[in-house]
Length: 466
Image 1: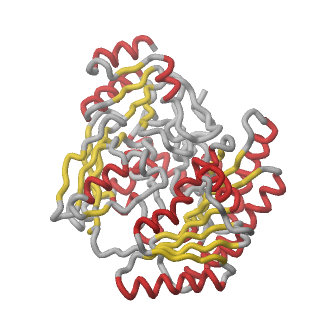
Image 2: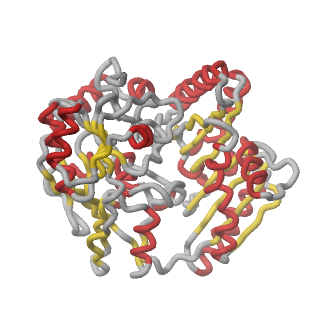
Image 3: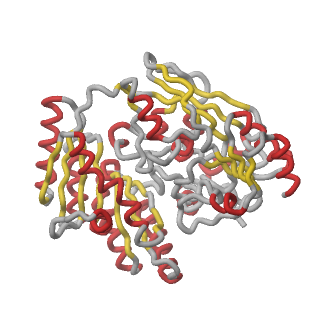
C-alpha cells in the first residue's frame, strides 16, 4: 500500500491525503451497527472535481477499490471501507455553485449539507423538499447515493424526484455530465435516475442539479394524537390513506421512542401513551383547515387520545420535535440496529403487529419510528453493549422483519439503501434476471469492480470485505 499512498501524494495537492490511524478509523465506516468494515490505506479529502479524478485514476492504475463517503451518517454500511482501499471523502466540497431562481434549480457540490442547501434557496423564496431526519448533518451527495426520503416524502417524493442532473466521475476517471436543467427532457437513457440510489457503485457524484419548488403558498397545520396501541395508530394511518388524504407528513413513534425522548428532554407524557402519530397538512386557507379537521376526526375514530392541533410554525416544530429526536434518544440506550422496510400502506397495522410479535419471540427491545404515511417503517433493535447473545437475537429479529415485510408485499429498504446490511434481503427480493441486469450495468461502467465493491446488490456470492 505504500506505493499507492505515494502515488496519491504525488498526484494530489498537499494536506488532502490522510494516513494517520485516527482518520483511517473515523472514516472506515458509517453509522450502521454491526456492518463489516476494513481499514483503508488512505483517505482523500477531495476539494474539487480534479481531486476526485486524480484519486480515481491512481486507484485504477493500482487496482485498488475506491469507497466514496459523505458525512458518514448512512445506516446500511454503504460507506464502509474495504481493507486497503482508498476512501474518497466529498465532505469538503461544500459550494452551491448556481441558483437559478427563474428556472427553479440549484447546483450543489456533493458535500453540501441538506439543511444548508434548504436555507440557501429559501433566501430566494424557493424550497428543496427532501428532508431526511439527518438533514442537519447529511450531505446532498449521500442523499443521492441512497435516494434518501424524509418526513415530507409521503406527499413531495424522495431525492430522485428532485435530481435533474449530476456530474459524475466514472471508474476510468472520465467525467460525465448527465441530465438537464429544463423542466422536461427525455433524450437518451435516464442515467440520472439510474445513478441516484446506486450507492457509489457506478460513479462518484461530485455535484447535483436539483429541482426547487416555490416556498410560498404553504400553510402548515399539525395534528398529533396519542394512541393506546401501535395497531390502533396503524389503523389511523390506513384510515387517512383510505380517505384519500395525502398529508405533507404522517409520522409514527412508539412507546419506547417516546419515553426515551421524554426522559432525555424532561418531557411529561400522558398515561397509556403507547404510540404517537404526527400529521401535517400544508394546503392554504379553508382547504387546509378542512383537511386538518378530517385528520383529527380520523385519529379520534381510530382510538386517538389527547389529539392536538397547531398552525403556528413554532408550535408545529415543537410537536414534531419528538420525531427528529427519536433516533439520537435511542442511541443513548445502546447500539441500535436500524431497519428500513417499506410495506403497502394498508399493511402497516399488520406489519406493526408482526414487529411486536418478533420482539417478544426474539426477546429483544424493538422501538418503532416510521414514515407511516407511505408505509416506510424503521424498527430499531436495541442490544446492550457487549451482550453477544442479545446481538445474535437482534440479528434474528432483523432477518425476520425483512421476511415479514416481503411476505406483505413490501421492499427491504425504503430509503437507507441496501449497503451491506440488506444484501441478503436484496438477493431474495430481486429475481435472477434482474440481478443479472444489475451485474451487466456494473460491468459496463466499472469493469474492474473498483467502485464501492460489494454494496447495493449482491454482485458475487461472497463479500469482498475482509
